[in-house]
Length: 264
Image (cartoon, rainbow, N blue to C red):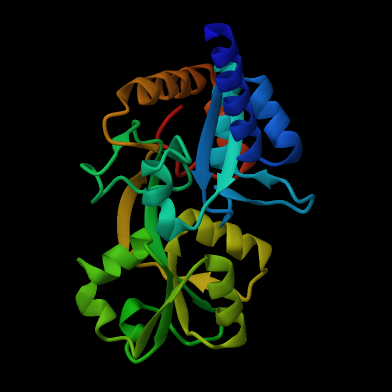
């Protein structure tokens, strides 16, 4: 009877696991009991995005893949709505938030890895807009991503600057914001400098960054508060990658060597 009950429970758990995942990924997860599920914004290049082949890639995802390879884990790349990231983490749907995730101002809300990127927030405008400084944004329509560090800055230390805008529009993702910027629906967009550099490189000379920084910050990997064991294992591997040069190799691939603060 006990053996039968054990078999029933095992079968139920297996079916539940397969039902929660789709297709080939479900088979991979079922075959490897040690998985590492990374929550990321799929429209936040160069840190996380979908490439021309329909595959999720980016600086943070390649770092996560290398961490998994070195630990014998299976990486599960889980796209999330950025403003739902806390729910995804607290529910156990993801193991961490790893996607240009700012530590500053959130120090006590998560268990953090060491910082690995020094980041800044900047404004991007059309090259022919006549906007050359933050003072020129007075009376302009500015875009920003929901629940982003740029928004936090505009609602915090830079609230006086934001008060001069005619409107501050929040977008679910920066690709939509850039579409509006291209079409002239907004005059500027506040954005992480690494993402800005990526967007500018892919869009020719139509846009420019303002020289003044909106804010400065650092990126880390955010784990559920108290999940020190997993944080320590991932962090130890990340530091090993910095020591042996793999971290910088991946940073070079994505043009982020000037931004990273590990491996130098």
